[in-house]
Image (cartoon, rainbow over all chains, first blue to last red; front, side, top):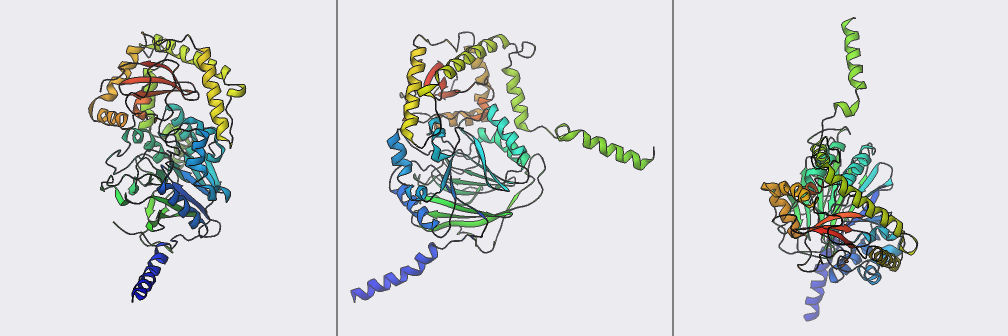
Length: 309
Length: 208
């Protein structure tokens, strides 16, 4: 009788496991596929579990690179720390040829810019284009001075009709109780985002996941839960589309044409959130609102929106 | 001239004026221009120009010294080996500390420039924006007592670097690499971010 119960429980769990492990991304040939982690530099069970899930998911969704939202290494940054906090947990991905592109957080030393696996080219802010039509901009939100603002203005101005995706540590919009929105940074960065039609901003700092309602046409995500969690810190607000502060997580993303698909996955392989956004409009300098607003897709094909919470 | 031609000429003239002429200023540009005026070394636009020029000369001299020292074993270059990054940083730190063994508090933040910095910082700490600034400063602060206020001392590598709110940063004089400002508690640090050294500081630069 006991065996029957165990068997029944096992069978009951199978469909759930299959469902939670299901990719909601189109995985189209020629698309740009990448992952996002944030505040990932704390060794421990959370970091290990997230890294393992990333390696596992890559067998089904072969992402080529990973964006790091900063706080890549907590605490000291000796060689043993690079090994323990980055090289060992992400060994499977590094061995598989996955490139990492890091932004700096408030816990990161500038020496990281010289670490080749972070692909920063010796700079605290930089840009790269993995494929024609898509361009990423790593911003150092710890120190937004005039020099960096001038650089960002110039680089965005010359990026034409590319997808413009910025990533940095401090969230310009956040429902976190501990940190909240980085208003000072927003005062200076947002007008430049709007002027040149930035489409998406990925950030960290808050130790949870939050998808923000598009602000003035720009999509904002917080993924700061890849090795640390601050349970109960997310005070869902009018900004929040979906949030989770109880599970370690990472995000997968795919750009195909004018649509960006995303799927946020927990350390247990469960899908926390999924959906897509589509960019629309023409690139032209404007004021107050981006001229290439992103539009959340209510029923994108082939993926479905993630669970509400 | 026929009306149609007039319209064409007008349109052409508008097009030739270029995007920069017709483009509205962003609030970012306005803030940057305001910051540039207050930190200018031109006496015609800034009453504190002389102190600013002196400060600029001192930080430029530091940057030149740093550049001279950041060579050989102390020169950073990209590597897969984190031990090399550590070794080069350590070598640079030692070289800068040796070259500036006689450096004293106030060598760069001279008594003349300190009140100018306090004046520049004060407006950013008032009102609603000021509350946000104070919250950020408190939020990202290193643990109390961990940062030594001592010229040529190492910034503790286990502590976070406090974020400088962007609206505060643009009101301060720009710095050459590798120098950066940091605010710890009420005090303003001048930090060499490559050698991880405290170059100088102003105590009680802000009132919280």
